[in-house]
View 1 (tube, rainbow, N blue to C red):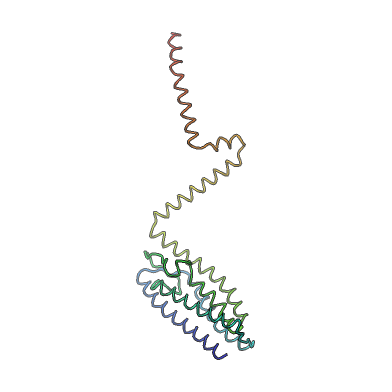
View 2 (cartoon, rainbow, N blue to C red):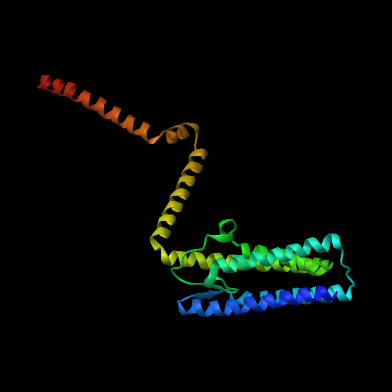
Length: 241
């Protein structure tokens, strides 16, 4: 149990190191016009992660959860892997990494490192660690409670991040956004046209399904036929005079 308490203490120290890095990056981002969103759910995240560390120790001690080598050692390996992934994310994002949602205008989105493979790799590390750390010493109630609560918070967090990144992209490339909006409007109009054509009678559907080149060819043929009748009508009119 002592070694497990030391493990949880090491994770707590790692969290403090994250906060120090995040605070430093927050100052850097704010100085460059960074805008923070999602302050409402940030406090809930802090409470949840603190509860994870406390719950690991309390459940293992009070409920007498034993260390089961067949489960404990693989879970410990996952905890270590999660820390590696988290700091890989921190190193890849550099000054842009933060525990808060702060978007600096005109900075490109990072697509290297773990972000080549996953859109939110840091949250994968959170999910793995939140389940594995309690299970190192059999604290399955804490693992379950954290996983359920974390799923709800991550849904809120990811929506917040995506909205902030989309807003920053719209400000940086307003013409691209208008082009996308026009494409979407054209797609909606096309879907409405196809839906209306499908509901029309068979004869109307056949006419509506006629392609643009076919309709153009039909119009051209009609004009040619009309023009060929013009001299004949003119000769008849002349003879009548």
